[in-house]
Image 1: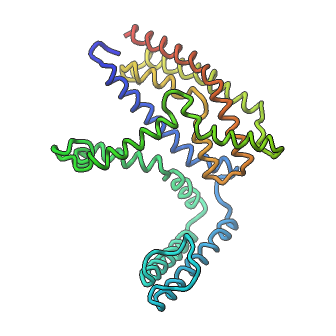
Image 2: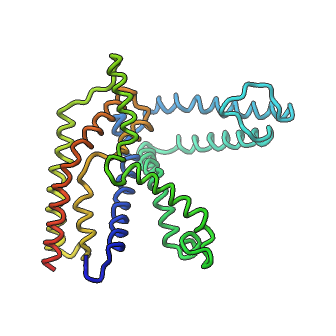
Image 3: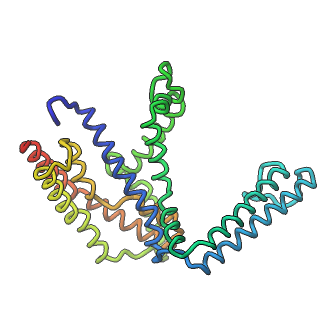
Length: 317
């Protein structure tokens, strides 16, 4: 830190840097990850037709159900499920009709597009995931002065959302950070630890619980704990000393050296859940993540090397 810098300001900047890294990483993970897990770049046309048929039947059923409920004054005698609309019959019918009409119009437009255009639209749509949408909304709130004042200023200074909305979201975010990326590192593996206990119970019963292949696992761990730290420290150190690309901020330099290092992200487990992977694959991922966090103390060498490199950059300037 510089002489005019404070520990609190440096810590806040480090959090911001790692937050930007997490946003980019999660956006790429949840956009490209499902494609890599499925071993395909785009859905097959026959598969799309097969997936669209149930949706058409669902829309038609909703429309017919809405008409029936409308005729019976909204009190149908059919079986109630989790898909049953809570709206009155005429509103449910109207909504189902609009959804069905919109789907048919969109499908006609989609069928008229060329293969390359479809591929580009599929790739673009894949990036419209929760991390990216949240980052865009947060950026708009932070950069637009009226919204920034409404969300972050004190209530007496125009912060109408500060006391109830912003504080609530911040508390939820702090809980998530403590469970996922907080300190101490043992809190990171709470969710995966629960899954691992399920794997161990399966192993005791003689059931399949996922097989961790040692060669790919060893390569991944070597890349995360040895190869990438050496590359990141060397490249960032060179850019900071030999060029003017990076600003003069030792906290930024230190954070960028650490970003590629460490155990694999917990998002891998979430990605397997979102992708409807088999229980055996989920168990194997849980075992691998536990192994990765067991060797995570090796990260201390990366931390020390990054500190030394940051001090060298600070001394050279």
